[in-house]
Image (cartoon, rainbow, N blue to C red; front, top):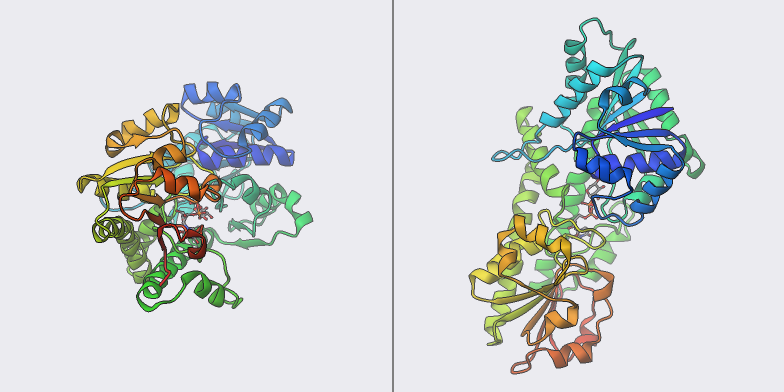
Length: 448
Ligand code: UDX
């Protein structure tokens, strides 16, 4: 089976490398010549643990190749997957489908024999139908079911663990109205039968909605536990015990109940906004999701306020060390990261900010790029290590739960900090226990 993936972003690249590992012949296509040239040499444009070696293996086995020539790739393929970006449209939060529609037209122009055209990008309900319409419009002699079929096959990959999520998924969702197309897609996931991965087969509309509903629900779970954390703080409760207490109920489940500074990343914020828009467009409302988006934005600025209030309450000097910049560990992604909402608030209030992140530190190349798109980072002093950042700070804030922050030498931290007043330690990811932090004025999220 030959598969073309259009778009070598996160989804296209991870899916391509994993399908190649499954044994299929994969061509990844992108318009960006520089990116394709780099990929041919095994240079990966994103940070994802394990992806570089998987791509290298794919190239070596001749099962994974990269090209800018969409036409030749599509012509030779049985399945073509659209994995281009669907960014939030400026102003209204709607998913911008320009790249998807363009890809559909390009693919239509190139199809040579029966081809299943699959949307892998996260797309609003009705997009697969639109893709079919574009193909028919571009090739008026084409009959759906004979020359081509469309399907939706959303991905549920988490940054930082995308390869494992692809290889050991909780489920695979296939949305198509055509039995032959469904059978072909099921064959793609044949290697997962061994681990008994459930396959949900449905129509394209349900499949498209499943992706948004899943992300919406998970975002809601996080916002719910964050609100419970606030309640715990006011009442003397402990949100981690509360999460355990409710999570053991199998109807609720214990995952995604970690209170923190609000969710970020390339998916939850964008997809919750898009879900609200989709509902409105269809004359209904997802008011729970509307509230989740609003609350999550507010949560990030509330967390900045918490730092400001703590500093004022303790008459502490105004230097804060931030540990962690990325929206979560094991990724270099800063999109909608809480840090990018919190740091500007601190700077606005004349706080001196020093930052260390295992992937954004003094002297690293990646940092220049980040600074070029995020103005506020220019005013921050980046450090070469966590201990460097902590030097003379009155307050340490853990924003991302990177492994290297989980076992800090607290004697050393305490010594390095400004000790004119009791040092403040704000653990926004609850990686420490209050009992082991007696040297500090310790704040954990949702700890009354
Ligand atoms: C998410 C979905 O999990 C994935 O299935 C989908 O396809 C893409 O979006 P990702 O954005 O990579 O993946 O990260 P995820 O691990 O889901 O975390 C998202 C955000 O939620 C992070 O900012 C994280 O810190 C936060 N989070 C997560 C919490 O605050 N608490 C939790 O309990 C879990």
